[in-house]
Image (cartoon, rainbow, N blue to C red; front, side, top):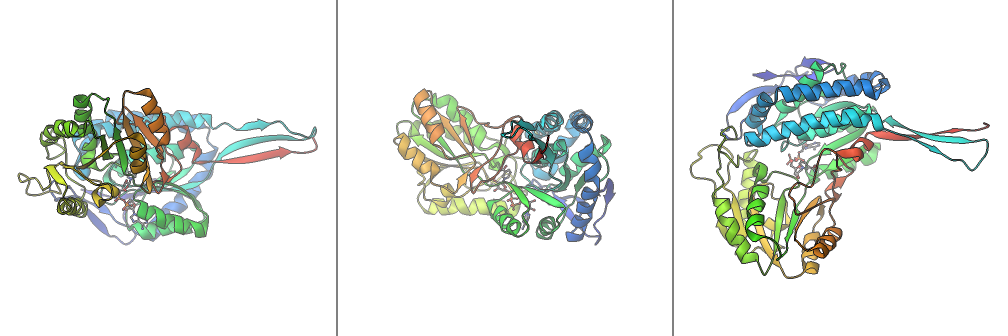
Length: 477
Ligand code: NAD
């Protein structure tokens, strides 16, 4: 199977003719080729998006919304095939891929509506002969660079908001999961999105990102990925004044207080930690359990971790799929080995699963007796490993939780209202889940603090990111 890039409403090869094999991380086998371009392809897409911008931005939000809603419906109608496509290139379990595509459809529907609410203001003037109003205008061409961990959700989140606001898009999905993004583009195309409004380029990351930074038509880059690359984009944008939204790494603390139902929370914690093989930016990672219940809590969790079935995402029995590639698996392996040498207890996992000879699998692992300063605790793992430490009081827990450059999401489990309020207010993170594992939703803002990023996606705030405020002031009235 061969897949072309999507530029100016057409399916097209790379100008160089180059292609790249996409692999199934569960089998390591090639599952198809995609066109693999470079800077020149990205520039073609930017030109197409710039040419399409005037007409798309002048359409009413009702006209744009009708197209985006149709895309949502088309995705819903084809969800089974789309989920299988995503499983094949990302390795995630089918159930999770289906859920992801449902949210992708919701995003297009929601921003089809929210685009209608880009309200300005009338500002009472201090002068009798002056009138002032603000209007909200789409900012222009937006470059969207996304990671592989949510191949449908990551692009859909940014594209839907940008398109709803009236911007045009040059999407550059991860080279590991490009076919999912191309499938979204196909649905937008078939729903009547005009040529050039959405473009998808696949290829060399750095030259494409440089093209987005250098070309003045690109007014904003929305990036979902690592803090390392986010920093590079910030450096580049300081030269060109390109606006940025950065959704970067996380290392979410989980504070579990002694008044919780240990059995129930321990079981749910395991399901949450190993979702998408731990490759989730808001994954609960740094478990901090109150000393009074830490042994009991660990004892409860271990059998649940051992019971997780590791395998191919397409197998309905699978709970945990492979990591995305060998590099990611080797990194996780090295972090666990280093922790084991440092004296932590490996209570489950700690190795590649013996029954799977191929694929980038790693057994769900739980580590007890971890010290907060260990790399397995202080670094983002992005894999199926749960490091557990303990604490004695709220202040100590907050100091450990906040002692990181990351500030994306955090979790608090308690039945005490005072503890819930003090902990959630004291955590220096953009999203805090109190007694829940999913502190996000299409209609709510998603974003990090500190080195976890800039700006927001989703919700009303997500639309704001793609709008600019203009003051129109009338004198001599
Ligand atoms: P990555 O930064 O290596 O890659 C992300 C994207 O950037 C990919 O498309 C990649 O090809 C591209 N890229 C690589 N080098 C680049 C460069 N020099 N210039 C421009 N683009 C470049 O990240 P990854 O390891 O693939 O993804 C995992 C990371 O993404 C984790 O840190 C995770 O927390 C983060 N993430 C964050 C969110 C969020 O919303 N905050 C969501 C998903 C993933």
